[in-house]
Length: 335
Image (cartoon, rainbow, N blue to C red; front, side):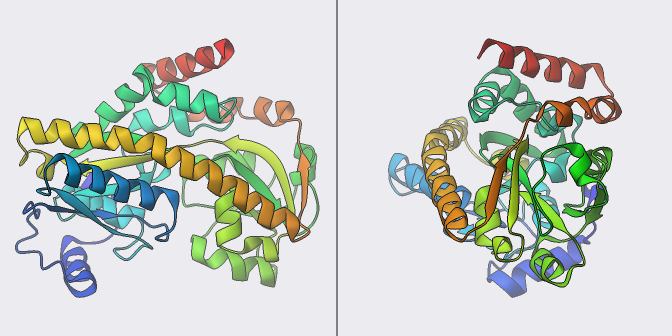
Protein backbone atom coordinates (compact mmCIF):
# COMPACT_ATOMS: atom_id res chain seq x y z
CA UNK A 1 0.00 0.00 0.00
CA UNK A 2 2.83 2.39 0.77
CA UNK A 3 3.73 2.76 -2.90
CA UNK A 4 0.34 4.39 -3.61
CA UNK A 5 1.31 7.52 -1.71
CA UNK A 6 3.63 10.36 -2.59
CA UNK A 7 5.44 11.36 0.60
CA UNK A 8 8.57 9.54 1.70
CA UNK A 9 8.69 7.93 5.12
CA UNK A 10 11.45 10.32 6.18
CA UNK A 11 9.38 13.40 5.32
CA UNK A 12 6.35 11.99 7.12
CA UNK A 13 8.33 11.31 10.29
CA UNK A 14 9.84 14.79 10.14
CA UNK A 15 6.42 16.34 9.70
CA UNK A 16 5.05 14.50 12.71
CA UNK A 17 8.01 15.22 14.94
CA UNK A 18 8.19 18.90 14.01
CA UNK A 19 4.49 19.64 13.74
CA UNK A 20 2.88 17.72 16.54
CA UNK A 21 5.47 17.07 19.20
CA UNK A 22 4.62 13.39 19.26
CA UNK A 23 8.27 12.43 19.40
CA UNK A 24 8.21 9.24 17.33
CA UNK A 25 11.10 7.06 18.38
CA UNK A 26 11.83 4.92 15.36
CA UNK A 27 8.22 5.55 14.25
CA UNK A 28 6.90 3.00 16.71
CA UNK A 29 3.24 3.20 17.81
CA UNK A 30 2.65 4.88 21.14
CA UNK A 31 0.58 2.47 23.21
CA UNK A 32 1.19 3.92 26.65
CA UNK A 33 -2.59 4.41 26.83
CA UNK A 34 -3.21 7.47 24.69
CA UNK A 35 -3.89 6.64 21.04
CA UNK A 36 -3.43 9.21 18.29
CA UNK A 37 -5.88 9.90 15.48
CA UNK A 38 -5.90 12.17 12.43
CA UNK A 39 -8.72 13.97 10.65
CA UNK A 40 -8.63 16.58 7.88
CA UNK A 41 -11.86 18.19 9.09
CA UNK A 42 -11.90 21.01 11.71
CA UNK A 43 -12.33 20.30 15.39
CA UNK A 44 -16.09 20.95 15.48
CA UNK A 45 -16.81 18.55 12.60
CA UNK A 46 -18.97 15.48 13.40
CA UNK A 47 -16.27 12.96 12.44
CA UNK A 48 -13.77 14.59 14.79
CA UNK A 49 -16.34 14.74 17.57
CA UNK A 50 -17.26 11.09 16.99
CA UNK A 51 -13.68 9.89 17.44
CA UNK A 52 -13.33 12.07 20.54
CA UNK A 53 -16.53 10.45 21.84
CA UNK A 54 -15.01 7.03 21.12
CA UNK A 55 -11.98 8.09 23.15
CA UNK A 56 -14.19 8.97 26.10
CA UNK A 57 -15.87 5.57 25.85
CA UNK A 58 -12.48 3.87 25.91
CA UNK A 59 -11.41 5.93 28.90
CA UNK A 60 -14.55 4.99 30.81
CA UNK A 61 -14.49 1.32 29.88
CA UNK A 62 -10.77 0.86 30.56
CA UNK A 63 -10.81 2.69 33.88
CA UNK A 64 -8.74 5.54 32.43
CA UNK A 65 -6.14 3.22 30.90
CA UNK A 66 -6.96 4.03 27.25
CA UNK A 67 -7.93 7.18 25.39
CA UNK A 68 -7.59 9.01 22.06
CA UNK A 69 -6.03 12.34 21.14
CA UNK A 70 -7.36 13.61 17.80
CA UNK A 71 -5.34 15.90 15.52
CA UNK A 72 -8.01 17.65 13.41
CA UNK A 73 -7.78 20.24 10.65
CA UNK A 74 -5.22 18.34 8.53
CA UNK A 75 -2.47 19.09 11.07
CA UNK A 76 -0.69 15.92 9.97
CA UNK A 77 -1.33 16.33 6.23
CA UNK A 78 -4.04 15.31 3.80
CA UNK A 79 -5.77 11.95 3.85
CA UNK A 80 -3.26 10.26 1.54
CA UNK A 81 -0.38 11.44 3.71
CA UNK A 82 -1.91 10.27 6.97
CA UNK A 83 -2.94 6.92 5.51
CA UNK A 84 0.70 6.08 4.94
CA UNK A 85 1.63 7.18 8.44
CA UNK A 86 -1.09 4.90 9.79
CA UNK A 87 0.02 1.84 7.83
CA UNK A 88 3.43 1.77 9.49
CA UNK A 89 2.18 2.66 12.95
CA UNK A 90 3.05 6.34 13.17
CA UNK A 91 -0.62 6.99 13.88
CA UNK A 92 -3.04 4.67 15.63
CA UNK A 93 -6.32 5.82 14.05
CA UNK A 94 -7.27 7.62 10.86
CA UNK A 95 -10.65 8.91 9.72
CA UNK A 96 -10.73 9.14 5.93
CA UNK A 97 -13.14 9.19 3.03
CA UNK A 98 -13.23 6.11 0.82
CA UNK A 99 -12.11 8.10 -2.26
CA UNK A 100 -8.35 8.05 -1.42
CA UNK A 101 -8.65 4.30 -0.88
CA UNK A 102 -10.23 3.54 -4.26
CA UNK A 103 -6.85 3.01 -5.91
CA UNK A 104 -5.66 0.85 -3.02
CA UNK A 105 -8.53 -1.50 -2.19
CA UNK A 106 -11.02 -2.58 -4.91
CA UNK A 107 -13.78 -3.27 -2.38
CA UNK A 108 -14.05 0.47 -1.66
CA UNK A 109 -15.26 1.12 -5.21
CA UNK A 110 -18.89 -0.13 -4.99
CA UNK A 111 -20.03 2.20 -2.16
CA UNK A 112 -18.20 5.04 -3.92
CA UNK A 113 -20.18 4.71 -7.17
CA UNK A 114 -22.48 7.54 -8.23
CA UNK A 115 -26.19 6.90 -7.60
CA UNK A 116 -25.64 3.47 -6.04
CA UNK A 117 -27.47 4.56 -2.88
CA UNK A 118 -31.07 5.74 -3.09
CA UNK A 119 -30.97 7.58 0.21
CA UNK A 120 -29.07 8.07 3.46
CA UNK A 121 -31.15 5.28 5.01
CA UNK A 122 -30.13 2.94 2.16
CA UNK A 123 -26.45 3.76 2.64
CA UNK A 124 -26.62 3.23 6.41
CA UNK A 125 -28.50 -0.06 6.07
CA UNK A 126 -25.92 -1.42 3.62
CA UNK A 127 -22.90 -0.45 5.68
CA UNK A 128 -24.36 -1.55 9.01
CA UNK A 129 -24.76 -5.11 7.74
CA UNK A 130 -22.79 -7.87 6.04
CA UNK A 131 -21.84 -5.67 3.09
CA UNK A 132 -20.14 -3.17 5.36
CA UNK A 133 -18.37 -5.93 7.29
CA UNK A 134 -16.89 -7.36 4.09
CA UNK A 135 -15.57 -3.97 3.05
CA UNK A 136 -14.07 -3.31 6.49
CA UNK A 137 -12.39 -6.71 6.46
CA UNK A 138 -10.72 -5.94 3.11
CA UNK A 139 -8.44 -3.35 4.75
CA UNK A 140 -6.54 -5.94 6.77
CA UNK A 141 -4.30 -6.90 3.85
CA UNK A 142 -3.18 -3.25 3.69
CA UNK A 143 -2.01 -3.17 7.33
CA UNK A 144 -5.19 -1.39 8.39
CA UNK A 145 -8.09 -2.49 10.57
CA UNK A 146 -11.49 -1.26 9.41
CA UNK A 147 -13.54 -0.31 12.48
CA UNK A 148 -16.70 1.48 11.34
CA UNK A 149 -18.28 3.78 8.78
CA UNK A 150 -19.33 7.38 9.34
CA UNK A 151 -21.56 9.54 7.13
CA UNK A 152 -20.15 11.91 4.57
CA UNK A 153 -23.53 13.16 3.40
CA UNK A 154 -25.19 13.50 0.04
CA UNK A 155 -23.10 15.44 -2.44
CA UNK A 156 -24.65 17.99 -4.80
CA UNK A 157 -23.40 20.16 -7.64
CA UNK A 158 -23.09 23.90 -7.04
CA UNK A 159 -21.93 26.59 -9.44
CA UNK A 160 -21.76 30.27 -10.28
CA UNK A 161 -23.77 30.20 -13.53
CA UNK A 162 -27.24 28.85 -12.89
CA UNK A 163 -29.35 25.89 -11.80
CA UNK A 164 -28.77 22.38 -13.15
CA UNK A 165 -31.96 20.51 -14.03
CA UNK A 166 -30.74 18.05 -16.67
CA UNK A 167 -27.35 16.74 -17.82
CA UNK A 168 -27.54 19.20 -20.72
CA UNK A 169 -27.18 22.02 -18.20
CA UNK A 170 -23.77 20.64 -17.23
CA UNK A 171 -22.25 20.84 -20.69
CA UNK A 172 -19.13 22.98 -20.72
CA UNK A 173 -19.11 23.68 -16.98
CA UNK A 174 -15.68 23.49 -15.37
CA UNK A 175 -16.30 21.63 -12.13
CA UNK A 176 -13.75 20.96 -9.43
CA UNK A 177 -13.36 17.35 -8.30
CA UNK A 178 -11.00 15.66 -5.84
CA UNK A 179 -8.00 13.89 -7.32
CA UNK A 180 -9.92 10.69 -8.01
CA UNK A 181 -10.29 8.75 -11.26
CA UNK A 182 -13.86 7.87 -10.32
CA UNK A 183 -14.87 11.50 -9.75
CA UNK A 184 -13.20 12.51 -13.00
CA UNK A 185 -15.05 9.83 -14.94
CA UNK A 186 -18.40 10.74 -13.33
CA UNK A 187 -18.25 14.46 -14.08
CA UNK A 188 -16.89 14.01 -17.59
CA UNK A 189 -19.59 11.42 -18.37
CA UNK A 190 -22.21 14.03 -17.46
CA UNK A 191 -20.81 16.41 -20.08
CA UNK A 192 -18.96 18.80 -17.79
CA UNK A 193 -15.21 19.33 -17.63
CA UNK A 194 -13.74 17.83 -14.48
CA UNK A 195 -10.93 19.88 -12.93
CA UNK A 196 -8.90 18.09 -10.21
CA UNK A 197 -8.02 20.63 -7.51
CA UNK A 198 -7.16 20.67 -3.80
CA UNK A 199 -10.14 21.60 -1.66
CA UNK A 200 -8.42 24.65 -0.16
CA UNK A 201 -8.09 26.23 -3.62
CA UNK A 202 -11.77 26.02 -4.54
CA UNK A 203 -13.04 29.27 -2.99
CA UNK A 204 -10.52 31.49 -4.78
CA UNK A 205 -10.94 29.56 -8.03
CA UNK A 206 -14.71 30.07 -7.91
CA UNK A 207 -14.31 33.75 -7.11
CA UNK A 208 -11.84 34.29 -9.97
CA UNK A 209 -13.73 32.22 -12.52
CA UNK A 210 -11.03 29.59 -12.86
CA UNK A 211 -13.79 27.03 -12.31
CA UNK A 212 -17.55 27.35 -12.61
CA UNK A 213 -18.49 25.08 -9.76
CA UNK A 214 -17.81 22.05 -7.63
CA UNK A 215 -19.69 19.35 -5.73
CA UNK A 216 -19.88 18.49 -2.06
CA UNK A 217 -22.20 18.02 0.91
CA UNK A 218 -24.09 20.79 2.68
CA UNK A 219 -21.69 21.14 5.66
CA UNK A 220 -18.61 21.44 3.41
CA UNK A 221 -20.37 23.89 1.09
CA UNK A 222 -21.13 26.01 4.13
CA UNK A 223 -17.98 25.65 6.25
CA UNK A 224 -15.66 26.42 3.31
CA UNK A 225 -17.88 29.43 2.45
CA UNK A 226 -18.19 28.32 -1.16
CA UNK A 227 -21.84 29.42 -1.03
CA UNK A 228 -20.64 33.03 -0.89
CA UNK A 229 -19.48 32.80 -4.51
CA UNK A 230 -21.40 29.83 -5.94
CA UNK A 231 -25.02 30.91 -5.60
CA UNK A 232 -26.72 27.92 -7.22
CA UNK A 233 -26.92 24.42 -5.75
CA UNK A 234 -28.71 21.58 -7.54
CA UNK A 235 -29.80 18.64 -5.40
CA UNK A 236 -28.46 15.75 -7.45
CA UNK A 237 -27.44 13.65 -4.42
CA UNK A 238 -25.11 11.86 -6.83
CA UNK A 239 -22.79 10.43 -4.17
CA UNK A 240 -23.29 9.14 -0.65
CA UNK A 241 -19.76 7.82 -0.28
CA UNK A 242 -19.09 7.10 3.41
CA UNK A 243 -16.18 7.89 5.64
CA UNK A 244 -14.27 5.07 7.33
CA UNK A 245 -12.42 4.89 10.64
CA UNK A 246 -9.25 2.82 10.37
CA UNK A 247 -6.70 1.62 12.89
CA UNK A 248 -3.08 0.77 12.20
CA UNK A 249 -2.62 -3.00 12.21
CA UNK A 250 0.77 -2.39 13.82
CA UNK A 251 -1.01 -0.76 16.77
CA UNK A 252 -3.85 -3.28 16.74
CA UNK A 253 -1.48 -6.24 17.01
CA UNK A 254 0.04 -4.74 20.17
CA UNK A 255 -3.31 -4.93 21.95
CA UNK A 256 -4.67 -7.82 23.96
CA UNK A 257 -7.72 -9.60 22.56
CA UNK A 258 -9.85 -7.95 25.25
CA UNK A 259 -8.58 -4.47 24.33
CA UNK A 260 -9.11 -5.17 20.63
CA UNK A 261 -12.73 -6.00 21.35
CA UNK A 262 -13.05 -2.87 23.50
CA UNK A 263 -11.70 -0.69 20.69
CA UNK A 264 -13.94 -2.30 18.08
CA UNK A 265 -17.04 -1.91 20.24
CA UNK A 266 -16.26 1.70 21.14
CA UNK A 267 -15.88 2.51 17.44
CA UNK A 268 -19.23 0.93 16.64
CA UNK A 269 -20.86 2.71 19.56
CA UNK A 270 -19.59 6.03 18.22
CA UNK A 271 -21.57 5.63 14.98
CA UNK A 272 -25.04 6.59 16.32
CA UNK A 273 -23.45 9.58 18.06
CA UNK A 274 -21.81 10.68 14.82
CA UNK A 275 -25.02 10.29 12.85
CA UNK A 276 -26.97 12.40 15.32
CA UNK A 277 -24.33 15.13 15.09
CA UNK A 278 -24.19 14.81 11.31
CA UNK A 279 -27.94 15.12 10.76
CA UNK A 280 -28.02 18.23 12.96
CA UNK A 281 -25.03 19.72 11.11
CA UNK A 282 -26.63 19.11 7.69
CA UNK A 283 -29.83 20.84 8.80
CA UNK A 284 -27.93 23.78 10.26
CA UNK A 285 -25.69 24.22 7.21
CA UNK A 286 -28.61 24.01 4.82
CA UNK A 287 -30.51 26.64 6.81
CA UNK A 288 -27.51 28.99 6.80
CA UNK A 289 -26.96 28.60 3.07
CA UNK A 290 -30.58 29.07 2.04
CA UNK A 291 -30.95 32.07 4.37
CA UNK A 292 -28.09 33.73 2.48
CA UNK A 293 -30.15 33.68 -0.72
CA UNK A 294 -28.53 30.74 -2.48
CA UNK A 295 -30.92 29.22 -5.02
CA UNK A 296 -31.50 25.49 -4.49
CA UNK A 297 -33.42 23.34 -6.97
CA UNK A 298 -34.70 19.77 -6.92
CA UNK A 299 -33.50 17.46 -9.69
CA UNK A 300 -34.95 14.41 -11.43
CA UNK A 301 -31.86 12.23 -11.04
CA UNK A 302 -33.02 9.44 -13.38
CA UNK A 303 -31.29 10.77 -16.54
CA UNK A 304 -28.12 11.47 -14.54
CA UNK A 305 -28.06 7.95 -13.12
CA UNK A 306 -28.65 6.40 -16.55
CA UNK A 307 -25.48 8.10 -17.83
CA UNK A 308 -23.42 6.36 -15.14
CA UNK A 309 -23.62 2.84 -16.61
CA UNK A 310 -20.30 3.22 -18.53
CA UNK A 311 -18.69 4.54 -15.34
CA UNK A 312 -19.91 1.55 -13.34
CA UNK A 313 -18.68 -0.81 -16.06
CA UNK A 314 -15.27 0.88 -16.06
CA UNK A 315 -14.73 0.63 -12.31
CA UNK A 316 -16.45 -2.65 -11.40
CA UNK A 317 -13.75 -4.96 -12.74
CA UNK A 318 -13.81 -7.94 -10.35
CA UNK A 319 -16.54 -10.46 -9.51
CA UNK A 320 -16.34 -9.41 -5.86
CA UNK A 321 -16.94 -5.76 -6.72
CA UNK A 322 -19.88 -6.58 -8.95
CA UNK A 323 -21.36 -8.83 -6.27
CA UNK A 324 -21.18 -6.07 -3.64
CA UNK A 325 -22.70 -3.53 -6.05
CA UNK A 326 -25.56 -5.88 -6.95
CA UNK A 327 -26.30 -6.56 -3.29
CA UNK A 328 -26.36 -2.84 -2.50
CA UNK A 329 -28.80 -2.20 -5.36
CA UNK A 330 -30.98 -5.15 -4.34
CA UNK A 331 -31.09 -3.92 -0.74
CA UNK A 332 -32.27 -0.53 -1.96
CA UNK A 333 -35.18 -2.16 -3.74
CA UNK A 334 -36.45 -3.53 -0.42
CA UNK A 335 -36.35 -0.24 1.49
